[in-house]
Length: 346
Ligand code: SAH
Ligand code: SF4
Image (cartoon, rainbow, N blue to C red; front, side, top):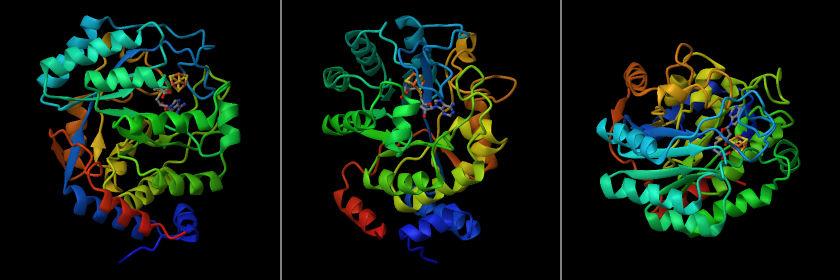
């Protein structure tokens, strides 16, 4: 069965009119492109300080309940040693936007990692200057994750005070220009977003021709202005995954830990509808639960985000954990990109 994905179809599929066909097609495309491999990325969250005040996020500046932490350079390098020691070929360094680490210091950390290990470095450190992005790229960083969060420009300005949607897009353009593999995505069910915004997101994320697409449901955090809001719907999020897989056959798509917070088994289901990446946490146990972007994240007794549970889950889902670097097959394949564009009937 071939799905033609006009905008009307995207709307129909997102409303759950044909989940069985949609999910089967997404898994078929995923297997054609990646076989049964699930790439592993070890994530190290090295600071929970943030200068921003995103209304949805537990790390926001105005959340006075946070017990803060920062890892030292040695602790970061120890974490990377553990990731490399376990045979993973990608480390993801993520934080709030923490000015404590200068751009040069981050560059030195990247240089140290690249001199010690054959490992891809992915950064997820928020919005920074072109100069900082360039320094990090020159130090050897390979990839950058920066979610656009929503395609509703007005809502974006509301949920990210003092931030502008176009600036986020500009950061992504800068990162692409600097030859990073770039990743972006949205939160499904962000308060203030409408169903139509998700339709737009599926279309516009595809037009961005991303190497990586990271998406998950919104989860309300009690110490934010969105406390008590409903979480993003897991079924809708699964449909977003499936559509993005079909429209972006070669993108690396993680099944994110927010999937698990929204519904037990959610991450496994993400793998079954197109996702091909899992990012186990290697943040030291001492601080792991303090990286509390949303409730349930990184809490041991609730959800084990670590490597062993990831390996068990991948096997249970019927896939094979891959320790390959899993670089984007899209990067050097302009032709595929053009074919991919054609799939999206306007
Ligand atoms: N500070 C960086 C990286 C850390 S935040 C940045 O903002 O880019 C990483 C991601 O967590 C964000 O992009 C956002 O999509 C997600 N996130 C934040 N709050 C969330 C919530 N309440 N529910 C689900 N995801 C959330
Ligand atoms: Fe900071 Fe990122 Fe959270 Fe916004 S989403 S408050 S930038 S950590």
